[in-house]
Image 1 (cartoon, rainbow, N blue to C red):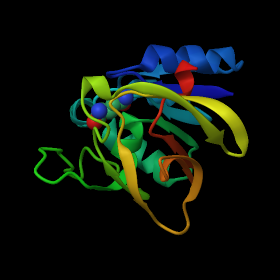
Image 2: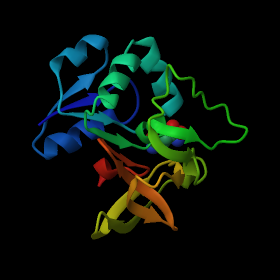
Image 3: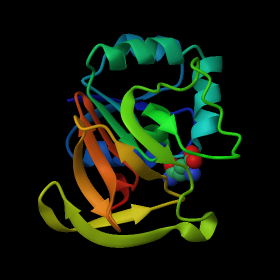
Length: 180
Ligand code: GLN
């Protein structure tokens, strides 16, 4: 399996290590030409979603990636990646930039950014993921999913709220599966 890892900002190195550990071939997506290599999976790493959104636009990556996501390319999205995919941001008073040229906005969920507090809001817990119990889950300035459309499958929850979801070709996490 060939995994294209978005590598403009954030925890892309951890994402590559994770996929290589699973036996996949990985390459970094830093510019438009990288997309010519073709991929079976697009991995969107954690990081700072507003920065990633701006860089996606500035580097000319946004439109071709959005087209591939819409075309059914499997997407594995972590944290900031999930935020960029979310249809709605529930962030009253924030300066989250959801302009359509930098926010994919395709996943029918609502997220609230930095929902567990700022830097100190990072923690690891264990829970059930996709039927598998005692799964380690590391949250780093994580968003909360506050609403999901009925067609979205919930794979894990924390305090009753969804923390990982699957919808069509997208699997997305508010926590960092690649770190544990
Ligand atoms: N807090 C970041 C954001 O709002 C996401 C953090 C992460 O990706 N671990 O974009």
